[in-house]
Image (cartoon, one colour):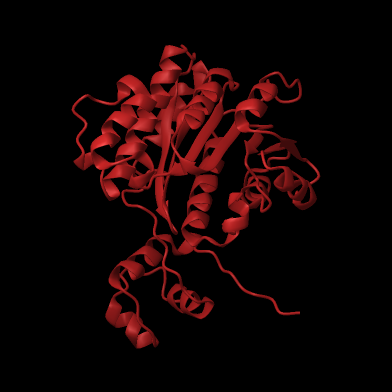
Length: 314
């Protein structure tokens, strides 16, 4: 079953928050890097939420969506939200190489977000290597994959599986403990970023690869998003300086786990923010309802990006 038949990706609050953080951060990069006339490439599915954001927030017009499913391709063509979204039928491993030779886009910076719903595997790894090898200068690459520990075998087999996938960046002494529970997502994020940096170095990209994105979020399964910038040689220092500051938002210390709130609850909490004092459970109870401490803390951290969903009854 295609993932769009199982999940409405536009109604996942943690994923929505992650998207807003990423797109706002990329907008700040546009001011300092040569990202004019950028092309957005990804998996729009039938929802195209990120494509609308790429157009509205970043001003991107040229967009390519890759869709492998036969039914999904027809639905994606029907649901494409803008005239400049080009839907291409096929698997990413087949479609990406055709884009490297595309005269319309091959000399322009790309924003590639390969948002998979399955685990890090050989196909995903090879797509990463392919994009790093061939993407134009000043391109961005983000990859999202499932970080659930059970997707990588039994506990005793996980370190070996990661070595099998990512090679020498995985230390021989990687422990089973590092591949268990929430630590698994942290391990995956760090090693996958090391792999991307290593690939760029092996390929001698002039500006290298600047690791810039490391976000873990959870609406159901824990998902890992990692990525970076492949700058021109002259822009490498600028890109590194911007993304290494304490204010760079795309390396949050903790996973994004947005609480599921009603519209009324979210609006009531938002009316108390921003505030010098932290919201407490006692304060929320005085507002008329109750939440766990960690739910309050998560909302306070991400309320500016918290989505508002409503059902319209005609």
